[in-house]
Image (spheres, rainbow, N blue to C red):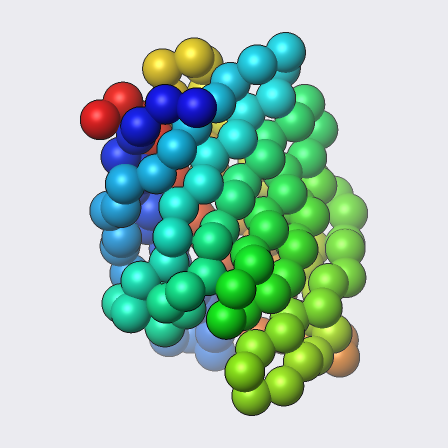
Length: 138
C-alpha cells in the first residue's frame, strides 16, 4: 500500500436539478495482478465521519465498500443492476444501482476512474450520478 491523494468529484441529478461536490483526501493505494484498491476515511464534510471507504477495481466491475457509521457494499457493472443494503445510524434500506458506464485508467502510480450510474430505492429513481475519481501519489 502506498500513500496517495484521492480527488473525488460527484455529480447528482434528479428532476432537472443537479448538485455536485468535490473531496480531496489522503488515502492508501495498491495495484497488483490486475486488481486496484484504494481506501480513505470519510470526513464530517461527507456526512459519514468514522466510515472507511474502499474501492476495488477489477476487469469488469467496481466494488465500493463502506464500513463504520455507514455500511454498504455497492457493485458497479456496466449494463447490470445490483441491489445493496445501505445501513445508516437512522436505519437500513435496500437500494439498487444500475451502471451505464465505467472508465478505468489505473496503473501502479494511480490514475482515473469514472462511473456513471442510476441509484434507486424500491424501483423509484433517487438520482443519476457521475463519479470522477483521480488517484495520485502523495
